[in-house]
Amino acid sequence: MEDKAKRYARIKYGLALAEIAYVLSLLAILQASGFAFCLKKALTNLSSNQFFLIAAYSAAIFLIYILLNFFLAFYRSFVIERRFNLSNQRFFAWFLDYVKSGILGMLVFIILLEGFFFFIRAYPLSWWWMSALFWIFLSLCLARIFPILVIPLFFKYKKLKDEDLRRRILDLASKMRMKILDVFEIDFSKKSLKANAAFVGIGRSKRVLLTDTLLNGKFLPEEIELILAHEFAHYRFKHLIKITAINAVVILLTFYIFFRLGNLGLDIKDISNLGAWLFLFMLFQLVIMPFMNLISRIMETNADGEAIKVSGKIGYFISMMEKLAKQNLSEKSPPLWAKIFFYDHPPVDERINFARLRSRNFPQEAKENFAKRMEA
Image (cartoon, rainbow, N blue to C red; front, side, top):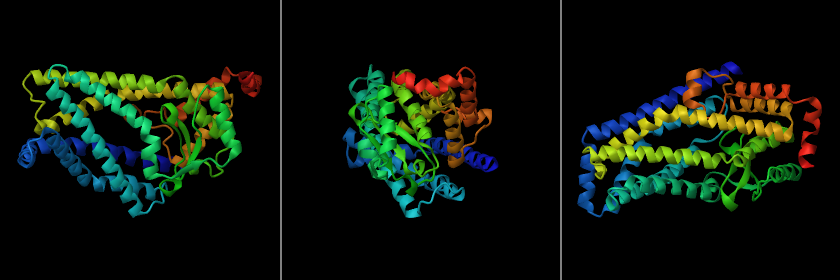
């Protein structure tokens, strides 16, 4: 099983690197070939309205991307997943999801760029921080509507029927001072055989989502409860707010660099230079990716520690991690370079070793009675 997980991981690493190279190459070719200028000229002949020009140009570039990316995406998310028995999805269903995600991605892309170029035109000296605030605001709006409008486009979900498990999760949420709408089950198995759970939404839209692949009897209620304790810990530690603040700083810094480059004579107002700016934006994201992954792994470790502390069920935590690794075909101990560039969660072996280290300072009597003391 470990050899199979390693083979799967190596293929996924290679495909991720191939996609990065593809996107960078596409942006460079579009810009260097003169295609970007010709596209702008053709669209300007249709209308000189700036909002139309930005929307049409953005849609055209995005459409080129998803069309040329089709075979790579097909191989990565359909062929490989079926080859390793991680999916039983049919091609038409996969293709429909690809189209829907492409349309959604295009709409978000257009809105982001419309705001970006609007502030450039309207506020030439302060657009960089105004555009950054707009992007951050939009990301929060998307987080709010994601469980309500986006998830139902891909999955059907209903309230969890297992009343005992539902009550366990609601009691856990109450103990950790969480307010949630309810606990839902989504029909994940029609697309993937991997197991997962999530705590999604903000404000009144917060809800727990459990995949039906997690509820197939392989995972004990205590193990599922630990998964949710981990997710609740993120909220308890305000990790979402912290990571949003870090992303805000990154976007502000990126746009400020663009602003300074614009002052050096690079015309950022010209939509035909979009490919060059996206190329630079992606390079900057790649440079800071190891740093962002490191921050995320630290937060994940803190959430693991809180989940173990609240439950006192270290044995169940270890068995849960072992089962997730087996069902999701996770590489338990990846190479250091892969961990640095691709892992926003600690590898499975590190999480298990962390739990074992915690158990040394967690007396048996405390393990058995910790939950009762927390409730008291």
